[in-house]
Length: 121
Length: 113
Image 1 (cartoon, chains in turn brown, cyan):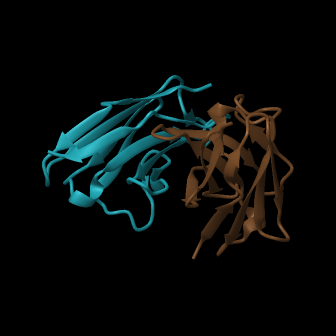
Image 2: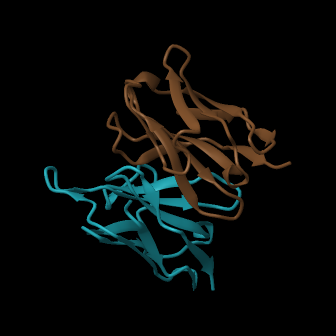
Image 3: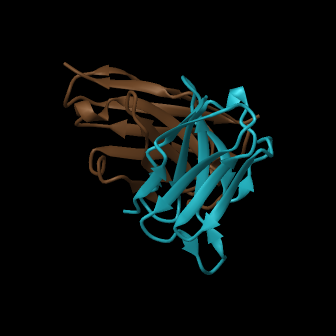
């Protein structure tokens, strides 16, 4: 059974930093592209960042480019999102999500339960 | 960026009746080399993460009831729930994965009338 479990969310002040982690199991993690998608309270879904199965390619939404860094450790089956210079508008539930195939350009197959990031003073 | 729009914003349908949700992309998401539409549909129930329903515009995910179907090509797509059940109350999102950044529609809320 595929499982993805996010951690690392919490309350942080504007301008602060946070690192999210996503532990994956139940599939060959290294083969699949992975994504982070966020959802602000009461709002819709926003794709934030993605990384290819090899880790050689990373992609970002313009809203986070230069502030967020996605990475993966295939030896630990873990995905990360390092977030710096956080803003109030980054407040959201952050979902770790698996790609549905080994291609990056794929639908999202499985979603974690999400971890809440709140940016506030 | 490809902009995704959905209509209606919300709809209320009687149990057992058909629900139809439309999704439009600002440019085609049909990749000519493989003739696939890079379009997915997700269902999100209150307090839960989204769940994949449909991908490649019309391929139903394993385990999804066959009352859910997807259609369309190019820029215009439809999600149909043929006979609405109480457990289908949710917000439904379309998403394109044709180009970066992947983008979602604003969502359509489906309720029981």
